[in-house]
Image 1: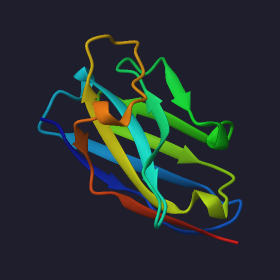
Image 2: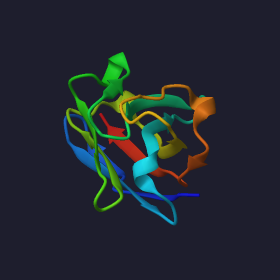
Image 3: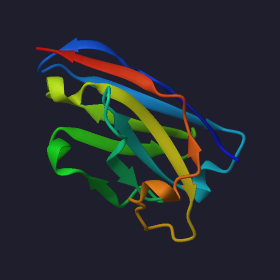
Length: 127
């Protein structure tokens, strides 16, 4: 099964940008639909953005639409999350996740569908 390793988190100020990366290994990255989730301190994990196997279909929660962009580089087995205009409420641990998906143009939004998870990377946005 694919293994996932996130990087790119850090401490930034309101309005700044960050780019998170997720390197997949030990499995067929191209067979997986992917997503980014986040978990604020003391709260549950929530979906942030998801992308289909072929990279053509994306999904975002309302609070990040127009500010975040999810993308994937299947050749290099990488998933990305470009985060612009960051706000304090974006502060959380961010996780990438993968699920085997039969259809190349399907986005998976159900957390329970995701089988593989990275260890997470902390994003802190100061006001």
